[in-house]
Length: 241
Length: 346
Image (cartoon, rainbow over all chains, first blue to last red; front, side):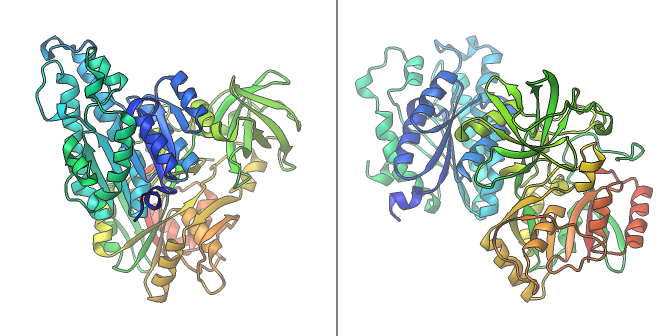
């Protein structure tokens, strides 16, 4: 199946979609014919993205009351939601600090934004997918979910939790036609990366537009793959990158 | 009017072991929701409603008089433009006051503006001959932003028998996907996906259609007499095909909720064959109605809702339903949209 055949007419909802990888994915998938809605917290960035012709919703995925508004508005505008990309991430308080120096409220915030929010939004979009017998949930992960990096504790734990929710969802829903995957996009030159590592060398970081292009090729393949979680090099190996 | 003496389930918590009253042709059984699996046969088709509940109550001001108003959206008027609505106007106050006790709204005329927020206004485009409170409006948000504005400023329609303000998330059924319902199509309130998967394992085919569930009551006698207002439905070709296949094979078609009954029966030809597509239903079922498609109905317990009882009478004689409901009262069944469940066979 060609790339635009897969993406053409697909309803795609992307959280954290007003910057970085989320915005790059929104733009790429729209050029391939998908109908896209993004979510962001910052109304100014939302307005900027709306002006690009991408339907943008101002909301915080960590807010329980926002979830059905996001799902309802997206379904109303897109018609249906075939792919949910949980990309919005809370890094934790910056500068990043030792877990020992991390306030419990910051850990809670990481869990709310990175685990509970995606969990609630996934449940809100699943009914439509299950009734159609097909759908795709993509949880953007990180190698911090697997490796123990000092000062990345809150974020790491939350990403590990969502990785495992992904595995359980896939075990429960694959037979119903819905695939759930968690993937590490790899280190990219994004605001989030520089917030974590202010003196990172941009030359060593991938361009989110390039990553989005490769993901657009990879995601249609996951229906026939066994794995749930993909490392940065793992998913790239399927697209010859 | 809804009776106070009935035990309304006031919490929105899903109860996967809710009581299930099975009103069969021969007997009435008091069982539990999980027993629904054994009540259906392989090859039966269960058709559910995938409508998501909108935040259809908007509080605002009638600009001409500065009077506080509440507008409850009641009927989408244009399948190609979500900004055109028929709605019910209330005066000041909110759901905490019983609908019939609400202050009347100011008189409105065509061209009057209703302001709900700095970014959401509507103009009155019509006033119904049956009641000055039943108005047609057109929201003037750009089409792309209408849903955003509605979700930002609307609240779910709810009633005074609820003990607390409901969140939008309390009012979405298990199957909620398409944002068109003004009130929850509540028959599936206690279903969970585990039950759905067990039904599928049993060989029951689960299909969906979209039916825009309307408002239950308005507090205005003239409007209440006109309910239900015309309700749009969309039946996917795959659902129509599944229903037709089941009937041809002598299997049963079970509707999850009264909206599904009305949509399927409206979409069926005289021969009972259902066509896919979209239309509007004004069908009111009653004891005289001869069902063409639907064999069984899963619904809630709504004793004081006369139009609901009329619809049930299309499945079983009124005395059998009254007898079954007496049993339910004796067994302590809970009523209204968070109450217990009923499966009635025709």
